[in-house]
Length: 298
Image (cartoon, helix red, strand yellow):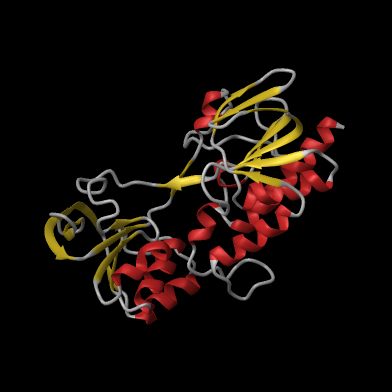
């Protein structure tokens, strides 16, 4: 099967790239290994996407996906390898495809803490998505780890659905937007400053955590039923590495202003390129990548 452009990833960047590539006259389809929407679907509430005062992440991404589906097909297949040459060959877990250009919109992955108990209790009290799993912890004690917008938003959400929430942050000030910080402090969420979680403990399920107070250099236990780890994301760059794209020191794909990578006819957009990781930015980069592909192939 020959296609002008194949987009890898169906998050905000990939879906927008699909729309713009198809509307530019390119034969286009999207390959997605999981579910459309990416990490944006996990957001409980989005209040900074133009046109919506507030909207659930899943609803916003469903609308973008439905829009994209009018122009392109989304195939749920995982790309295992990309062969570069006059035609690019994409091997998936279900077939092989050829393309003149590829847009990598593979997004990011939840960053792990790497502490004892984190992997052991995944799905048994440890979660990376409050909007996905918060329902199971209504009326229970939960710990949110992080200090950015996501951690603040999800902590407020958990408090609103009836959880007893403590947020722990390694510094004495959050990184979250000022408006979110004010809402967090009004919400009743307890905040433990200058501290990190050293270990997650339990038997069959999470029972408590060991917290290291960095300022006092002491350890203390806190009984909790759930731990939500929201400390940021890392780039999903396995395919980029496999084809030898230039990456920055943090593993994000380096692009120029037109989303071109270090390989001709390979473009990248969205969270996998780093920078300002916001949905509106991912959409913009997806559009730029598609228009650049159209320009280069014409």
